[in-house]
Length: 435
Ligand code: NDP
Image (cartoon, rainbow, N blue to C red; front, side, top):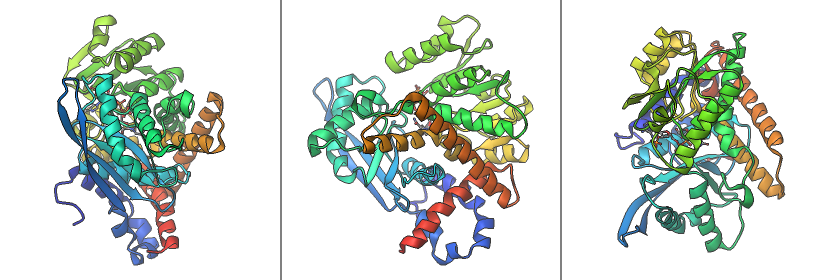
């Protein structure tokens, strides 16, 4: 009823959350009395705007920009900006909705929002990306602020784009506000922010493994994606003794039976972050590695732990069946909603430890929160300090999700636990604040 009937990603994310809350809602009638669910599934505000810019041929291009300000009950809106041709209101509403619960789980005072554009940064020159970012900020600046809404990066938005966006914001408002996170180290960024989502997901998975007396040592791990989250998930899992067998991009997957060590990861980082090339080049460089065009990693090799770190709905029921048949017992989402609903149900029904992205990828936004704190205090913490805080936050999120699930009789159900723990804090704040 709240959608145009065709917002399939948004409906999918709301369905997952609502299916988890039944026992809590039965136990606590105050949520129904205050119409919390009805209020939570509608964004407080959604801004849609035109982004005209000029390409290198001197031609005018036009993209659509969005900022979905979903819920500000516990703090200013906070969530990334995504630049990808697939971006539409359904995807940004799903991401904004998830962000509300995720930010609540971090225990930091941040509401939820998300934004972006259907702009495709692939193949664009730095000047074109700058021109686009400046035009986007010409409209966005009036809707954001350190106490209003603090965007960050996401797919297609890294340090380069945040730099151009912040440069334009600063020029317009004439103030060095902490209005974006993911900034460069020389201009207000936090150490460990680039690493935070990938590291955090691995810290979360390590806590899940601990509950069964296990660790990453000697485990075979499949990771999808080769962007920000995937790169640092590979790094931390390898540091903890795992053998990471795969990476991928939107064209295909690499399987490397020897594992992706530090030298190979450095090649991936140069390839994806500097040269902006395709992952198939990895197979040409390292003997033993094989490239599979158009395929995702899940059915290409057996693993103990799977970490989808690319995009939404990249792991479906057939993939889930293949993973379980191959002995996979832990699935930890680094991306947002990478697992389809039926695949999630299959994992939960087959005793696979499964963590939803809103819990296990919360390390990125948590460290963005730490970046905001450092900016507010006008100081910078060391990498060690930030990493320790991140690690502590991930352990707390794991325990909060597990304890909430246990409270309602399903201690291994991290989906239910994360949704209940995230929901309760926001819902109680909404009741306190009145309608
Ligand atoms: P990047 O843009 O750095 O990397 C995205 C990766 O996913 C790339 O390898 C990309 O391939 C691949 N990919 C993108 N779209 C598709 C697609 N449709 N099919 C297959 N592969 C695809 O983004 P991030 O690493 O930052 O984000 C990855 C996921 O993690 C997203 O779901 C994001 O929302 C989530 N996330 C990110 C956080 C962060 O701090 N960055 C925080 C929390 C969640 P290609 O190179 O071909 O584009």
